[in-house]
Length: 633
Image 1 (cartoon, rainbow, N blue to C red):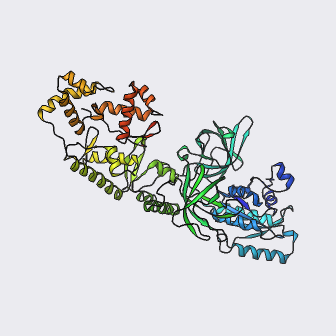
Image 2: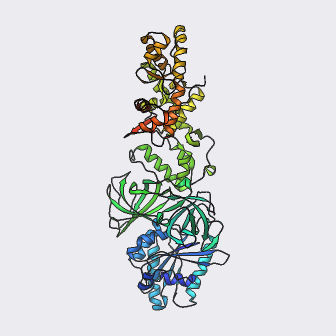
Image 3: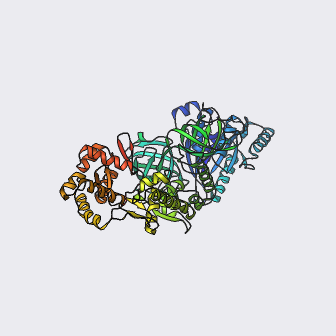
């Protein structure tokens, strides 16, 4: 069991920790000299029944609230420390508020320095503590009078016995979620290398496991583990762990970093959350600057209200936090918000979507998605998340949101799974698929009515016309599903309704064969219309008109006027673009053997049909965009 101390400076938290565990957690020279805790301290002691008590001793001074907030993350029980002579003080109240904001729900109270005052004073402080806790999750928490500086103090013994009973009553922890540890210390050990410590908030880890730093992205291998202060073969959820890591340097890691399963490593510069301001906090308007403490990390951010004009004291508001740098978070994470000067705790909240959008963040579908996420945080209903995703949700995204491995996702049998690029799958509720299919069919029908002589539309051009907001992977999966079902058809690179066709006369079919063969034989550098006309001994206008008709029928693609590509070489070129780390004219030219001018023409064609998008001088394949497979005959 992990216990976190809380309370005002000089109320005896460190002395009490030493009395409970025998460990002096003030390890820094400055802490010894000044007699106060500055950094987090850790102490362990065995409990009856084989459990281990871990105590995180946090500083009480107002200047070190950041450190206190990082120490509270992941604890099982709060030990609120109040000195009998001083009574309740400012940091007592602030620490209590932080405990509530971070979701701690179990606590007990140590009334320290009980030997320095009389019975009347002790009873008075006990009444004050009871009144302070009334109306909080800690109402009715037991109070233990202690004199921790006295060896064999019966109050300390009674408190230790209570902690043992609390540890025995802790419910079992699920380890279905992927591993995640918030780093609160990092150091090097001679001959061993980098070591990080923190509380495992999810999952399990063992020597040999591959983990990743977030943010940062560096991967490392776990060499060895200490759990609750002892060598261990596996680290579990809820334990204080020290991980010896290979492959990452100490300077790459800082307090606030996360060590996670690689599938959890994606980071973002914004997240959407439910935020509650304390009753005595000041109101916050749009783009208000704040300090945010999440896990052991400290960030600066700006607030963007989503369902109100501003944040009001005593009320919960949905808002987006926009950070100055990428950070790691998951749905359900709790955090503390402090004012711009970092001198007052204003409130806190719960992360809903760790990848908040920069645009359309207040749209009705977006707010409905956040409501579904809030419901999932409360009850874990995955079907609610899928049903609230109009365009579906990728399995990889659901893994990142829920921390559950794909094999641990429990989904209802009616949820459809469509294949995506890279081995991923799209999950979509049946009710969401029909409107998307109708939009695609209506778009094709409208195009056929306006352009009856055209075979259809390239799938990415069609997407820009009927569903520009849809995720590329969803569009690819939707088109593949409809093609397989026969509700749409494809001719070359063009999609069309099954009832629509561009017919060639017998004479045109006879002429088309040699022309198609010559264009395919030209591969990446097919002949121009004039060259084909000369080789086939045909009129140039006749060849041009027939090739354009073949393009309308989907058997060719016109890259520039009078230059047509066969579907098979064009599919090869699309694959080369996707494989290039930097698809610029020069790199594409080198990869294909084409001249610079032709390379530019082909890349601009891919931009035009929507397969790529141009960003400065680079042509970027759209995420999860799939170029249609060419016909096999």
